[in-house]
Length: 335
Image 1 (cartoon, rainbow, N blue to C red):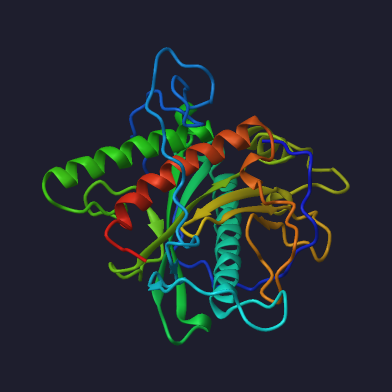
Image 2: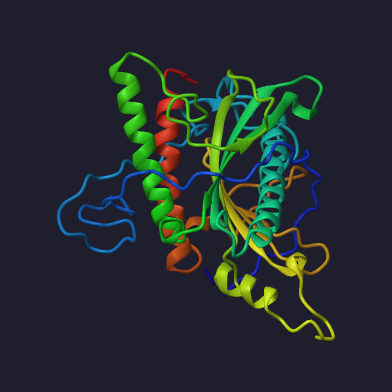
């Protein structure tokens, strides 16, 4: 993926550590097939006209929108908040909690991406080489020992290298179909499917201490494709560079990216670039990342529509996966 725009300087945030990450050992097994990217009939997973009519995807749910109450970051419903009192631009406690949680998500995504890059580089040329894309599921649990009483946990899925795992929109498309099939089979037996397993698990890594009652928060992706070029080309160039170069590049010079969708309507993008200027954390979002005040204008309000065609297709397919998981895992929890 390549992008022509860079986010403005952001905020540094020290999130929790990234323990529990482990690389993939199995290639993706989801079925392939057509599914509309944009929700329009007859579109395939690239957003191009397909061979025939397809189902129309529903609009993305907006948990926490006006008129339906709000979800607290810990996954508990709270009453719809009245207009905040005090000085214009002041944020509420719930808003500050969500800002903190978004920054935690971005930090965990950056940590996963960095370890994904290191492991994929170490495995280049091996039979168990890793593909350039991975998926991260975000969960929360209540914890009075952490700020805002909400602890973030993750479950991850990486893939072995291969043609089927090089195309990010198709990887997400196949996972959505796999998830939908698992949900249908579980519901036919009167059960609730859990993407963490044990039956039909979508993951192969993450926080090992995650409790089973952790609440689903959202889903994101880690990709090693960057503005420098496709992962395989960039990594191979670093590996094959002459040993006598005056300033040789290493794995620590390789960039990566991530995007995420959360159940409050947040769309978030993380760019991990070792050459980024000081003071720019690489985090952008359609919702606030500043807990100190409200800003009247956000240039990333339409974040999912920005970027090149591959990025927009990835956003669309991630939205399908997020809706599939959220509609199932959050059903019955009314605000």
